[in-house]
Length: 78
Image (cartoon, rainbow, N blue to C red; front, side):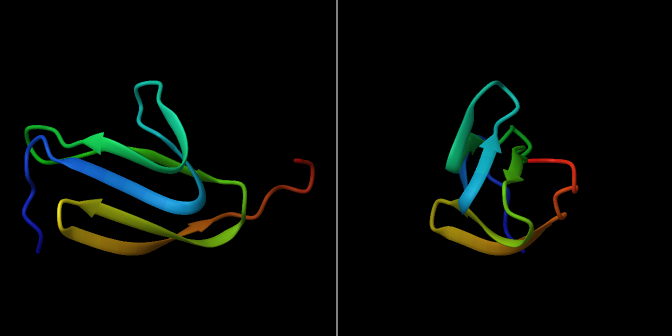
């Protein structure tokens, strides 16, 4: 189990993914956020592609990869 580090930079990344830090910063491909004093972090991730997308989370020398499943687009959306 990983140890949370207060104030650590955490980078979330994924090819073609869009990110929002909750404070007005949007980016494509990756975003870096700062962990709270409790070691937690928050970011939203969006995709223009449906299905499974790979998300990588990195902080310092530690890195983990997970799969995020995005729903199919509705028939009446672009």
